[in-house]
Every structure is written in C-alpha cells, then in structure tokens.
Length: 186
Image 1: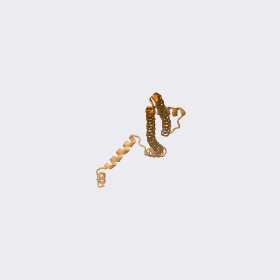
Image 2: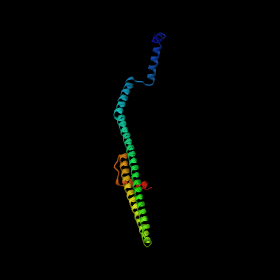
Image 3: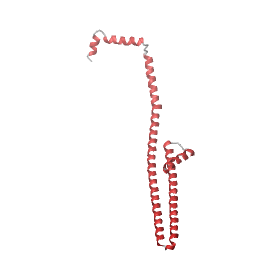
Image 4: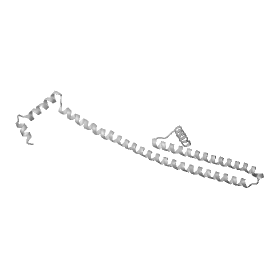
C-alpha cells in the first residue's frame, strides 16, 4: 500500500502505464462496449451449454455405465448358472454310468450261476443287457446334452439381449444358440 503514493510521486508512472494501455487499445482497435457484449454473449452460451448439453450428456453417460454394470452382473449370474448346469450334467452322467455298471455286474453274476448248457445263452443275454445299458446311457447323455444346449442357448440369448439392450431377431437367436451349443459340445 505504501508503494502507490511513491509511484505516483515519482513522475506519474501510473499515468504513463494508463496512457500505454490506452494507446495499445487504440492501436489494436479495442472497444470497451464490444468487449463487454462479447463477455455477456460468452456467459450466455456457456450457461446454455451447461444446462442443455453438458448435464444431459453426463446423465446419458451415467445411464450407460449403469447398464454396463448390470450387464456384467447378469453375465456373472449366467456363468454361475452354467457351472451349476454342468455340475448337474456330470452328476447325471455319473449316476447313469453307475447304474449301467450295476446292471452289467448283475448280468455277469447271473451268467456265472447258469449251467454249462445255458452258459452260452447267458453270455448272449448279458451282452444284450450291456448293449441296452450303453444305449440307455447314450440316450440319457444325449437327452441331457440337448437339454443343456437349449438352456445355455436360452441363457446366452437372454444375456445378450439384456447386455445389448435390444430385441434379438430370430436369426440372431438361432445363431447365438448354435454357437453356445457348439461350445458346450466341445
């Protein structure tokens, strides 16, 4: 604060600075009213952009972030359901194999008890039982795999439609279902 009177007293330094600023403004065509109107125009445009562009864009981005998070959560649920389905299939296959083995063991025990005369016939019957047991196991396995493929296809279609946020056409659904079935079969 003590410097201003000293500057003013030393030959009008403040006056010379003011004169230099006025000269520079005249040289470059500075107009105070035009500058003020540009500041007001800029403030209006900034306010309108803030209200009608920036905030709606942030809202849309936040909604998009939430949809992506929901999609990831749904994908995790489907992954868990797929693992549970695979575990159920494995349990069914194990049970079917155990049943088939039990049937095989029973057939062999029965064949050994028969007389020599009936031994050949018993072996033939045991082989037929084994073939039927394998056939039943194969049928059960194929049925379970077909059911798993349908379930996986439905889950993939459901997840894809939720993640993408659009209704899938029947061609898209068939293609996704076929791809999921190939992955399960592999």
